[in-house]
Image 1 (cartoon, rainbow, N blue to C red):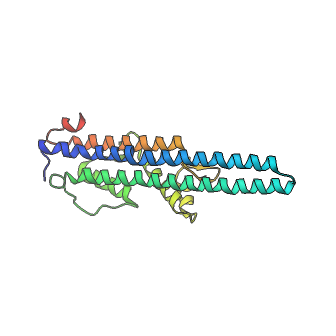
Image 2: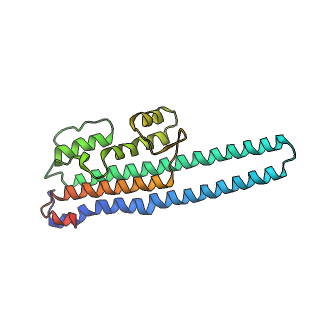
Image 3: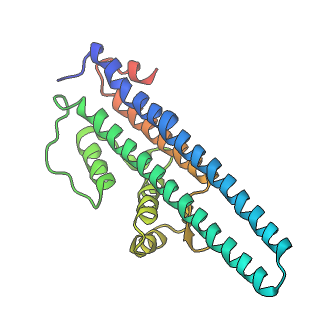
Length: 219
């Protein structure tokens, strides 16, 4: 199918669907988990202070401290896991949106070869350069931030240590490592969302220039 004027509204649905996934699924999931984990941490702190007040011996205080530390570590692990899952959702949404937008040009700009790269982002970068002459390195947030999203997601979901080490090695200032541990803090999470949205919007605009009526995709 070669895109014509009647098809451009369908093409424009791809970034709209991407935005709806972020707004209606990822953000509510993250915010609910963040709120509940913060409340859980408050209960842990309250239990700790109460146990310290009721402690009779030094051993009682030591036990209270150990219990609070262990429960706090559980909260941190749950926060990291949920954060990584949300990063994975964003990553998948970006990938699916890129593929969805490219699919509308199968006839006018068909794939001409097997695209290469280590990982899906590099392969899409090769494909977009070859098919559409769109250079991902010129996008407003940089390819590095999209690559960090993938590396951080891997570090958070694969706990064997190798993924975290790869993340440290490839990113000079990793945003999702704090005190040597993987974590997804609220501010950085929403920064990544903004970057993904800006990247998709830029790709959509660049692809829109290839349409028969290019102004439609840019309005």
